[in-house]
Amino acid sequence: MVFEIRPNRRFIVEDLPHIWIDFGKGGGRQYILTTLGTARCVRRQGLTLKPGMRVHVYQEDADEHGAPGYLYGVGTLSWDEKRLRWTVELDSDEVKFSTDPSVGPANPRPDWPSDFDPSTVKVPLGRDGK
Image 1 (cartoon, one colour):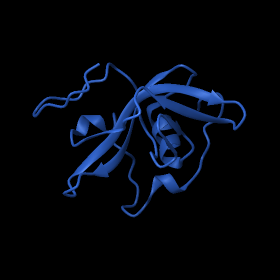
Image 2: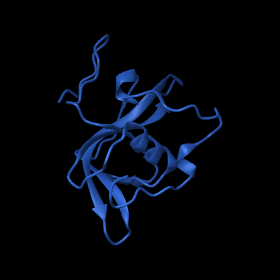
Image 3: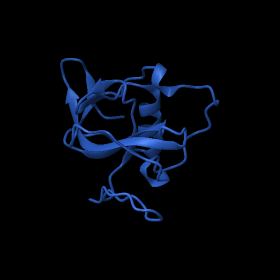
């Protein structure tokens, strides 16, 4: 895995699926996957989530000057049987930031209205990971 961002070089994280998450839904190393944005991202890519699956997670953000970029991390999925939801545990306590577009979506995002916030709608992914 390469976590260092260099000018004019693409960010590489093996061939892990890129999944959009809301970094406001958790903290530290543990985040939940319960928003419409996550469900749409998983379904758009035809992914089936599995416990132990390694993923690259990201969310749109901006740097201190307003330049667009992404929060991101790499982690492992698990199914929370008690709360019936998927979670991701990041490898590091530190959520990283980059302006490199390859850190973001693996495929273009579906057309959403510019004022639509996918983090506001909960659509749980089932235990079957779909």
